[in-house]
Length: 129
Image (cartoon, rainbow, N blue to C red; front, top):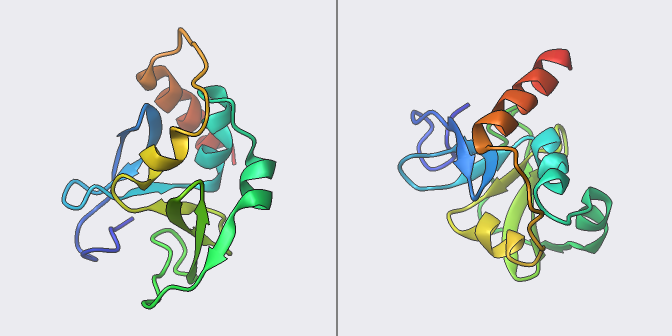
């Protein structure tokens, strides 16, 4: 997958705000596939159902395409955090700082699981799907 800021820059699998995601090393944007967004519930008191139900659609001046499947991304806000979601795959694109803005509205769960353990767990989920 490549970043939306520069179609030649690859997104790197990394720790993103204490959560797993794909991040651009140049602009700091973060791509979370749908399963990764759903898995936020393992590190924060977060409900994917509420996330979908409570967000507000916003108009974007420039159309962006999903880095995963090429569908058009639709803009949303929630808790003053801006992000875009792919209607095709359900992945979510966060510009630099926006995932942090969203997650600060949820209480973090205490966990003994390290970021690398979460990466391994999510790799298994991707492999099984």
